[in-house]
Length: 110
Image (cartoon, rainbow, N blue to C red; front, side, top):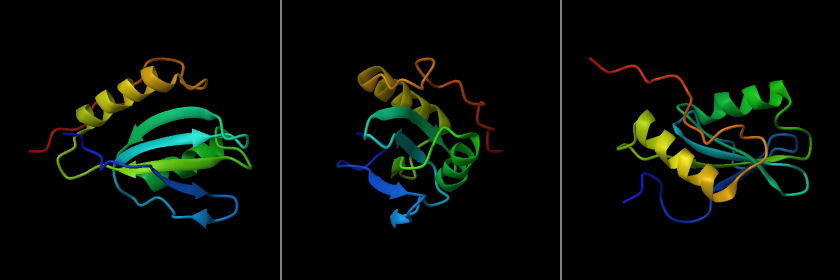
């Protein structure tokens, strides 16, 4: 069983405000260029923050969109990274320099 609900991801264009703004929740995101080509796949513990970081860095440029799925309560950083690796291998986006999952190791809850 997947940590993400079946179906297409939600879409958001941060430059026009069209679509649903990503929440401050953990999940998977995809960046599409203005031509609609998939350019990057990632996972994060805060979709809204990570979207803002990509805008500032220039990875998400004008005309591009963000697609995202919010992870359910059973997810962990490790399960999200594994899902990210599978999606990168499946779609081979051109801005992903590796097979994914190099993020910081999640802090263990005490």
